[in-house]
Length: 294
Image (cartoon, rainbow, N blue to C red):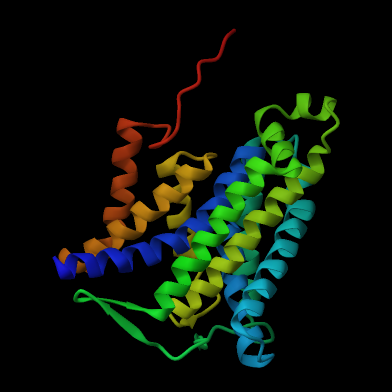
């Protein structure tokens, strides 16, 4: 039982990081029906911004997270304005191909020696690692930081979307862009805000991933980005609570597969669960089928 609880804590740590990435996928899809495949690379940029903030600029950890979030928010808005906004009325396949192109560009550009370079870098830990024993189950201060920051950001996002004027405008655009525009909502601004918020969360996730699994490199965003996308689909793409739930499930399943089955099967089992859920419930765990009147 102790070993089970230990793996559960490890799985929740991974799942919370996935949740911060998955929220960006689900928010963008909910607004513009676009899968931003460059989102995993924004997560990678956030990890590097946190790295430079702590290792090179000697900023404290809270400030490093803010730097990563602000930098990634600006990057997300820039990507939306340059790559996606001109294709707003184009066929969806055009936007999808563009998203893949942006992802490949970021990965290969940052891989150049005058940028980040291909060599992995050891991530600085903000504190010396300390572990606390809770009835035979150990939890480290790094895990506590990951849990605390992730929960605070997810709660803040939920309050922002549900309680603020901008959040209500974002929900209005998600439901009906034309009606929202007639009601005075600046749709283009709301789309940019959505990209910025989602990218900021991914940036925070990159820093948390770096301190929890302390090695980064330019291609590190590929697999977490894919798994976060799977988590968003698993929970119900476009639904914020669904992204959180799907991410936690993905993290726990991955960790349990590595612990009880084989680490080489962790990805296969995670994606296999997605296939199973989509066969049984195509809209995701929290998704609802909508009937369309004609």
